[in-house]
Length: 365
Ligand code: MRU
Image (cartoon, rainbow, N blue to C red; front, top):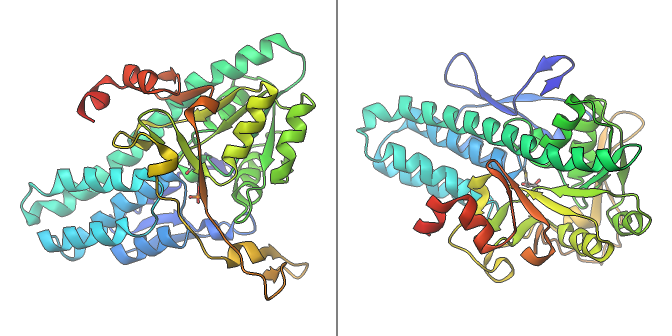
């Protein structure tokens, strides 16, 4: 997507063929710093410390992390080591394991001397595939927005949680792709952006995306969604996912489940934008089986912001004696999900729905 008129992806390889460029997302919306990664360890740090985040981008960065490892040492041992280090960075988004498995499958059969070029080529292909998947998710999802626009006056009000935008993917975003494509088609939309405590990806990232593309939006506190739905101010929810099980349970940023409950109670359609690499075909019951990342309590007891002098500061909002607890994701059971917007079309959130959409994977699982 464009930033100040310049087209960007969230990750790319420099013309030197050796430096992977990313946007340090911890500094948005105040700054837009592009930083270079030159080692596998730097890629691991970028994922672990959330300079890059969002399931598809985590996978793409891990793929480039393997390529950077192959520059330094392309032995079998180094490949194993890089996969282990990168896999340990974040536990919930399945795209990480998917990308590492994919890279290993391409590289392991090759002699070490051929691995560097093959790794960069495959990492670039993973990025290109992600862009195409998300573009297609948008094509399918925009039909939902179009249908609502056809039967009511005024903008289609869409609520989204966290950031499943282009910053979370290589381009387009998943949940935002139908929104961007609706805007391109001249459909009037308005987006309710959940702030998404504690890291505020909605406030920092989704709001920034909406503002920089001139899309009408309001930032709301996480607890406002139910109220807005009760008052008919939400036509549609679209969120992303970090891992969706073979039967359609959806793991996403903490708070997604409460939005789905409120949507269910108010008859608001609740859709999940789902690239196929985010499906974990080995897992059925999301609540029981998906590992939920537990992050630092400081993210809860403190908030970050920029003061009037332009300094980014951390401020404590709880008593010193109060400990925080910080589960970063939750699972929305399939029964609360209206549909899964995939690159092949919109599937019912069920084992049958996903198997019919992706028969080749379902048969292997
Ligand atoms: O902790 P984050 O910022 O990596 O969490 C991101 C999300 O929960 C997104 O909704 C999800 O990864 C889907 S991104 C297309």
